[in-house]
Structures are given as C-alpha cells and as structure tokens.
Length: 348
Image 1 (tube, one colour):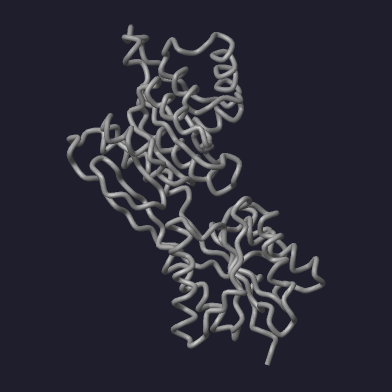
Image 2 (tube, one colour):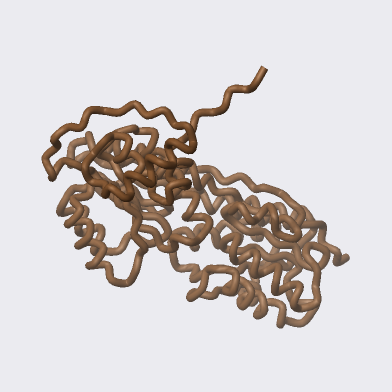
C-alpha cells in the first residue's frame, strides 16, 4: 500500500517558482497585484507539485485596502540566524491564510530616515525589528503613528511595543559553568562591541559564573571586534587572545555567536592548536552549520524559528489592541547544546 504524500506547502511552491510566499498567497487568493509572467511562474509550480487550488472569487478591493504589510527590519539578511527568524515570520504569515497580510523584509542601514519613509509610504500594519538596536527615529515614528512594533532582544517600555528577549545572562552563565565543570580556569570571551543590551547580558552571565567559582575576571581574556560579527571577526579577535604567552592564553573560549565561534576554531588551528584538545569553544545561536563544523560546535541554542513565528502572532494580536495598551514581554530560554568542541581541560 503506497504511503500518502504530505500536502504541498506554500513555501515549496515559492521555492519552485522563485518568488516570495506572499506572492504565492496573492496568486492563490486571485488578487490583481501580480504580473501575468509571475502568475504563470507560480501556476506552473503549482501544477508541477500537484497542489490543489481552491480559488476564491476575485473581489474588487479598494486599492488602499489590498494589502497589509508587516515590515521586518533586520541587520543582516544573509546571516543564518536572521534567515531562520525570517523563515519563521514567513511561515506564520502563511498560516494566517489572510489575503491582505504580506511580509516585506528590509536591511537596516545608517539611513534610518529612509527606512521610516518606507514605513510611511507602505502604510505598514506593524513592524518587527531584529538584529539592530531600536533607533530613535523608529521609536519616534512608532509613538506618533501608534503602529504596533515587536522588538527582538531589546527591552522597551512603551505603548504598543512588545519585546521578545532571550535570557542571555542565564545562557552564558550556564555555558561558562559547563567550561568550569570541565576544569577550565582561563576562559576567554570573544564579543562584538559589548555595549548593546544583549552584549552586556552575555558578559554579565560569563562574569557571574567566574565569580561564583572563585575565578577572577581577567580583562586580557576579553576581546571584541565591533566592525565584523562574522567568521573573520572571530578569527581576528582570537588571534589577539592566542598571542598571549602559553601559560596565560585561554584554554577555552566563549563566542558572541556561532559565526564568531567558527572563526575562533579556524584561528586556533591556524596557531597550531587543536579544538577541543587545546582550546574548547562555545558559540551561540545554533545555526544549521554549527552541527556540521569540525568538530561539531557546542552552542547556546536560540529558538530562532519560534521567535519569528511569535513576532508575527504577537504583532497581529496587537493590531486589535487600543493604542494606549502596553505591549507584552516574552522571555525565551536557550538550552546549551553540547557537542564535540568542548572537552576536559588538558592542563593539570
């Protein structure tokens, strides 16, 4: 007896047609905002994948009401962490199955006025901010327009602003304790700038774990590369730590994120050392490539996909709230995923 095939998802159609999920939704709901060429691409993909279309009759919708955009401002669209957050937001928009809801993603830049101008022109029903600090222009626009705003990993107390925050202080405390339990005493920390709210929380968790174990905090084991939060930044920052004399350099390193951690491991090997035999490494985010690193990376797992879904569902609930209502605050846990990049300290 043949197994029943799982139903085709809109995301599969979008991948096949080379368009966004929002565009697939507009074709399925028979709106007139899609070009004929694009509509044919989507319909060809639908036919190839065997998706059963339940057409809704085409309705004459006033132009101003055709589409309600959720704007997502993100600092780094290609970063695997933010890509997973964005995937979660797309999937939640799809689950809403509402023909007027669509998601538009914009890369953050230093031209904040341009972003606010786009929000005004698009008449956004709400904004999600991830990977960037809540810049003053955005907060002023939100206070003036009362548009719902969901901020990820920053804390703001203001009407119609909701916050989704990972408990980084606790996460980095537990990660540091894991290294201490393995016998490490010289534990390095590779940070970005250390000045953001989430950066401060990470550092405090690390310092608190050291203090609890009676290990003094050593500033020379802390380093940061503010201009580059990717693999190269981790490589450069670790080179500073490994330049210390052998009896002073770290036997374990905590990194700001997984991309930093991959750079840390590359730098360790470039200095003729081994991971984890000579230097244990812990990252943060649990991006897909973390499990396939060599060795597989121990990391703090952020619920990226769930954060994206929660951001959209929170935003759509806020749309129904009165303008003066305070937003919600959600604290997310981050478990430590122990893999092969951490081991017992080899020093006696």
